[in-house]
Length: 235
Length: 235
Image 1 (cartoon, rainbow over the protein chains, first blue to last red):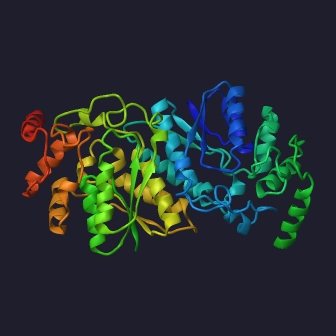
Image 2: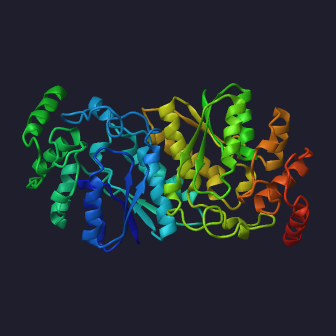
Image 3: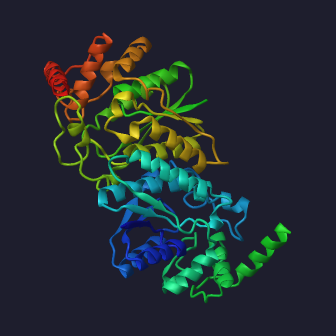
């Protein structure tokens, strides 16, 4: 089994690449430049490929930016701050983003001789992103079996789909993943901002996992306020 | 129901656009430039949108050409001549092409306010292209329902999936489709070559439908030889 990993350069997908490499099944990494303001993450994906000694392809999807509409990752809108909750997460939805990237990854796997594609969607993504849920993953795998029938037999792996981000941090720590060389923040700056939903989620996951977070945040303490506010809102 | 039609500029998809427009449900046309040597077809898609008075978007996928590998539509290989048969058709397979285009079309539909996507795959495509078969169409529709769950409700229409090309020519004739302004040929020249698989299939479909073919072919009589040769091979 030679597995192509869809790697954004974020904590989850870099940990996934290390996880796949640990069983000597890593074929290559593929990343997507879709006009995200945090495209700095792509440098982290390149570092990961170099560390693991595999090829890395960045697919330029900037031609799709206008088509993908207005959202907080690619559009003019500000990145929402605070803890992930349904309202703020909705602004970061890029419609059909995962399906587009995954079909391209399957094409790359078919033409490049890989026999599996892995992606790092995880349990924490489910409640707002429909294209991160187990039902989508299963339906996508079936669609690809039909699309490539008789041409290629490529499986879809999503080993984190039922884990939360803290479990991914624990796994990464066991594997020796260089977390400081991963990028979660949705903002464009060099440092992690510490205030956007994905920074708060990252910081909280390290705390829950009991793993030291080596990340330098512009605002290192904001996450506690955000987590407390979200807990109060839920109660 | 406002339907976005995936339109290559070929006979099938232009007829589909006219078919959808006849029931006043046409939202817009979307086409893809994926480095096909016969990109002249895109001009026909633009003419179709103008004739029907709807917007037309051409998505530039040239960034994917290298990734999609070597095949007779985008690569260096010559376009196969003669009647479609399994061996020659295989050279025109672009792996996962339909799935990629369809996920992008669904994204365009979601961000553009369409509630259906239609594509013109037809019965004659089934035997070699897995991503033109009814099983793929059904699996793709289910995948999209899961991917956009709670965000958009977009159906997939493939009304020609069980028709042959002659039936499409008959429908187009009834609708008054300007067939001369459609492009089937896989070669780059201004005229239809008359010798490639899709030219032979087109010419044969007009003959089977009993409809005058207004197309000017460089080699107008080759199709008879090719059809006879294919019949002999099958017997």
